[in-house]
Amino acid sequence: MIDKLLEYDTELFLFLNNLGSEPWDALWRAITNKFIFGSILGVVLIFLFQKKFGWKGVLLLMLVCALMITFTDQITNVFKRGFERARPCGNLDIVDQIRFVAVRCGKYGFFSGHSSNSMAVAIFGGLLLRQYYKNLIYLLILVSFIVAYSRIYLGVHYPLDIVCGLAFGAISGFLFYKLVNYLLSRFVKN
Image (cartoon, rainbow, N blue to C red):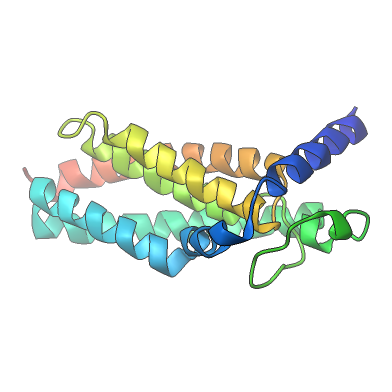
């Protein structure tokens, strides 16, 4: 059963990865770049948070968000070391069939840190701001899906790595949303 699932995962990866073309490669590398894409999203969220929670609230939110990203990132690394599933770009059985666009490959890929981090931020920010911007969460989730797909496009993650990363990120984002709600009600008065 697991072997068949992994076989389907590989087939889907090869299909999706080979949809890419060279003119789009630079865009997908920029999308997956934590510093470029993360900075743009971070500035937008900080601006929106400041409008609704003030600077004291922004500082608290940034602290909790940093803890959340550290948490999701470290748990992702625990899973990667625990499962030791090779990334597609490191799988010698398929390496000649993929479009490897990323700058580097990395050793293990289950599950995707980019997917978990981006989804955690989407759920966290979307839920915090839904009272003020009810459709923002959908936009943030779409951005998270785009970041997640970029990992397949670049050749560094299988779809199952992405789906599990997104699920873990959603759970993490919700838990840290609950935490920050408690802290905001206790320490920041609106």
